[in-house]
Length: 56
Image 1 (tube, rainbow, N blue to C red):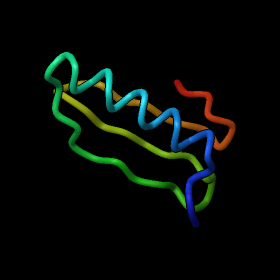
Image 2 (cartoon, helix red, strand yellow):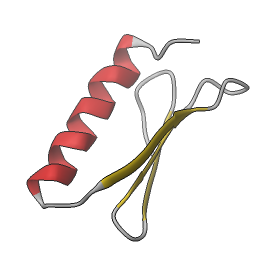
Image 3 (cartoon, rainbow, N blue to C red):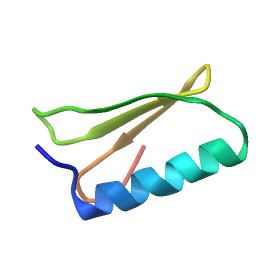
């Protein structure tokens, strides 16, 4: 399963902002059941990117 264009654009923006403030990106993983991307960064930052590109 591949990420959608919207997910890819949102992932890029999140990664750019994280590295801009010197936070490490520890994990990027796609949940094949839901199609959501998960990003773990720094010590306690978590993002979930839905196929629509919206994130929590």
